[in-house]
Length: 313
Image (cartoon, rainbow, N blue to C red):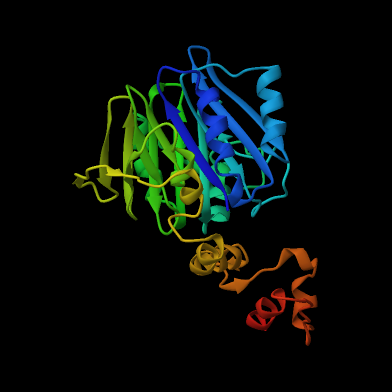
């Protein structure tokens, strides 16, 4: 499952974001990346494999800036490579987006945006979000992100950073993908799970489904996607680091059991073509004509994976 972290404050953002990503390693990933913004614009670093690969890049060529976002990706749309790794940027390299979840209508949006002159670099659905925000950018970052959400279909969480608004993060939650926001001493943090922020703050606000937040060093403003302002007090997280990685569950097995519905939904969703109302399994390498002639599909497994195969059957 992908991981999101974000930071605005007095420290170099990379020194905060990379340790936060480390605390999300248990979620699984195949690539990682970071974007920071400073007086010279946007800087990005990406790597395939473990976070250690990204850390080596950052050590060799540190991205500067006191605001940034970072991400660990588990590939869905597009292979695990540097181009498809998050963060994704717009045509002008002025804003960066990190995203968890699935954009169901990304093909339709990509086609429309390409016709408008937007240049795509990756195979991901996430890059569509960056270009869509750029497309709507006429009246500030919040307005552009808010308008973009009206065009997006799916369950997702996202964080957006712009060179034009270096002291602001915009975050959105729609559907099951979680997002939490924390504040320290003149600094703010964003993450897709609580463990990423422990060690920096224990006071956090959890975004509800259908909410968008403007995050700054001194506080946050939360609104529903329909425009109503939301008042919500932070909650104090009492867990230690180990308990936080278990999400409050007594042990990891219990956590995995209760996360199964979300895991199954995330796995299956990428193989559903909502526009054509079809199941799509590109990994089989079969044409539509081949699929028509398909009369038998075998699931091969052993151990507990056998039960997953039976569910698939």
